[in-house]
Length: 318
Image 1 (cartoon, rainbow, N blue to C red):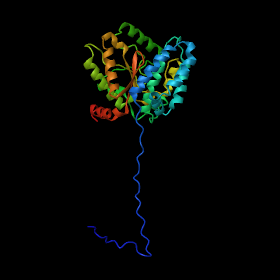
Image 2 (tube, one colour; image 1 turned 180 degrees about the vertical axis):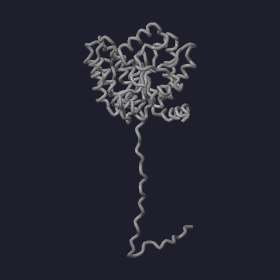
Image 3 (spheres, helix red, strand yellow; image 1 turned 135 degrees about the horizontal axis):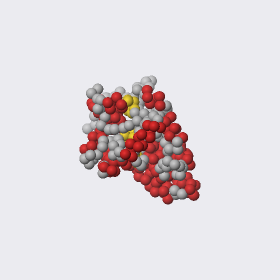
């Protein structure tokens, strides 16, 4: 049975109220997915095979065409765009570095293939830390409040790794060279760090790597050696004037990158052990690792920053 409506219905001379409009819920901006770093590294590896096939001087034009094509592929372009420099900026910088390359200079640097690899993989550092202000001068490195002096920690036995400073004179460099020839097992043949400062999180990372390396390496292997820490763009320009392939910008100038010795540990049967440790950390998303020959470049990922800051404070009793 139909129940009659109790509504009085429309009344003469009375305008019914308009239905209330719902305010649409504010939409959250969709954040673009982070670039796929595994795909990026794989694409770079494939590009390097093609660059190697064009290593001769006659391949200059062909290399430019190759880079024009490959750098625009999504797997690579996504990372380059995220650095702020973009594909075009990265392409122009890389072509300038290739044009500057001098394979016959007295102190040879990486070959063309290695140069492309180092440049492209270092873009991951810049993507991660693109909002960090670069350290322009040595004075900024010495006075930056987020960087600490490692010598203070070393003297108190709070560092599990080793480093040494660059000699300040020709005599000092000569003495070090002689010592290296006479006692090659005591220290790697490195020039030393120009400045002994880095971030607290990086100290915690290096201490952690040093402990893992000590557990895994054969008995008698020396501790982890660090060959480069934070330094300024001013310092990198000095290296460039000496003909070294010091690219800009760099994770070192942001304070988040270091270099660790690899080749020297081959004499102790420990090189591959350290390489596996670093690559495992990269696979876990904690590091960006670049094989630069005798030493490897290591940059901390932002996702590991909070954990390592807590680790540093716990180790230092803060």
